[in-house]
Length: 209
Image (cartoon, rainbow, N blue to C red):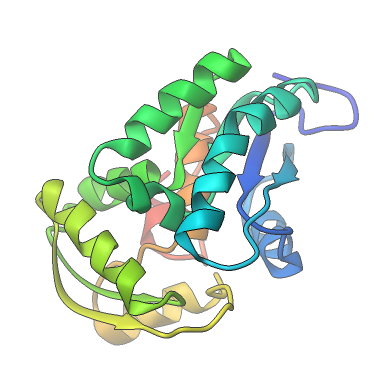
């Protein structure tokens, strides 16, 4: 694992589709154990148009190479819309491309969310996203190919991150399991990096580590 000024247990290189939201960084460090750090690279998405998403995909391999030069231990691609834009299976294909570009293990947001859902034995979901409905429709098709059914979906049409502190309260209120992009990112990164130990206070997924 990387040492020095970065995490001595795990150093995650994260490719963000947009400039990095401060809330996302704060929530990452509130949840992860000591010795886990992340370094980020931002892509060029200004709006969730197909042209911008396609342009971002073109830059992901370059971003993975850049992160590798900062001695990260693995690459995590954040952002579901560019992946579902390309259709079923593209998450795994993109992970392979990022791994080849960087020489490191790579995880995509979509693949980690699906892995988390399967681990939690979730087959039917109610989904809420900040996206427009056309992106939700693509998400539904992508998940259907993975045998995951969406029974209700809400496209909020806003640009606001889900606050990780709210997850555990929501799970208690609804008596269910909640999977967000942030807790899936932390969960999958720590599992891949072999950082063991349950994280409590942020929902069932992180408590299962």
